[in-house]
Amino acid sequence: MLIKHTLKVVPFKNPGGSISYRVTGRLCGIKVEKNFKTSALAEQKIAELVNAAGQGKSLPTRTVQTTFPTNEDLQEAQNAFFRLQAAQPGASLRFAVDYFLTRNPTVVQEIAADKALDDFNEARHHRGTEAITRVTTTTVLNKFFKTQKIGKISAITPANVKAFVTDATVAARTQRDRYDILNNFSHYLEKNRHIAANLVAHVDRPTVKNDGTISYFRVAVCQRLLDLAATEPAGRERIRGAMLPYYAQCMLSGLRPDEAQRMRPDWSNHSFGNGVITGFRAKTPAKTRTVKMHDELPGILQQCQVAGLTPGYFSRKAFERIQELAGIKPQGWAPPPKEADLKLADRTAVWDNDILRHGYASHHYALHMGMDFLIKNMGNSEDVLNSSYLNQTVLPAAGVDYFKMKPANMTILGQKAPMPGRPAKVAPVPASIATKWSTVAAVMASSPLAIAPTNLGQSTP
Image (tube, rainbow, N blue to C red; front, side, top):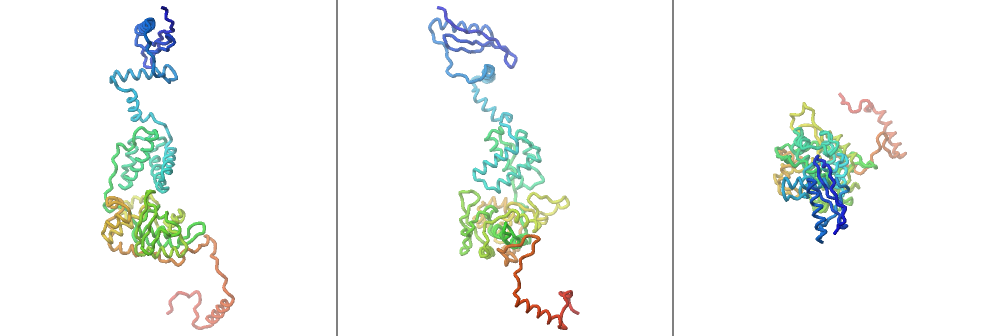
């Protein structure tokens, strides 16, 4: 019986240079396509298929149709399978591909460094990450890109990461923070197929030892901050003392900066009778905290409340102006070389996100020498307090002075300050009082004991 078919042998050259022979065509309406190393094997296969069809035997059929767009692509896949089987018989081609994709940094979706950072921050925003945390992350990663000359994520190497994390010019705590930020960023990049493996996988997380180098502000600096916060205007209405609750709560109760900004405007978080601040959202959205108000803090905050101030108010412009007036350098400032040998506490004060919290913990421990209260009030473990917050070189006497601090002048809290360059509005003097003043001035001028205006304030012989 004559079997109709269109089977033929087609030779072609593989990308590697070898020649293969493909049996292709249809037999009894069934498509056949198979490759062989030699032409003889291909011709033999055609004969076998035709003979089997003539004897009524079922032809081998493909149970899965290929979706390769071209025959060349299909040939590539087959060659890859043959190579894998030659090296490791029985191995899964799919497993080999997965293994390759997780370890080859070139098989990723290329992305610019600044675009990756924007996407990372957007993803964290949707997860509820606080704005101040995202700002810190952005600052650190931008510095990493700039110092290591990174334009695209694919350009990052383990050497870049190690150089940035282990930079000897920054403190151990900063090194650890850099590691943590890069680690979080790397997890995001790996999850979204921008890198094949974690960037910090071969870098050890820096350890922080508390040798008394944790930054804090001395009492004199903290007092300047309180004095300025009580008098400096803030906001569109230029209200004096608007920033005082922020500074006072961070200094005298150990609140985190972002926690201080979460206070309800109606003062319902503050229980002055019990001397506590309670019910506000902590570092994680699902938790709330309660902290103790110390010594002068309840009185300071009650005067703020009477003056119509709000406990969670924060103005970036006022904050930066107060820091500058207090002589505090912005975060990241480094001392000139001639000051490099000075102790940290003797250098010009430098801002740190948690430095007021450092000061609270350090001065409280110096005064009371107790860890249990700080663990509860600050919401940190003993290890974290020791490694990140306590500078144990602070003297007990400084602790006494610290918790006695209060602004020198709170009489102008809540008042509006005039715009710079404009004279303050003065109420007109009633005519009756003006007449009395002119009469008194005339009498004093005619008196032999009168003092000329130019001599006011000078001592008499």
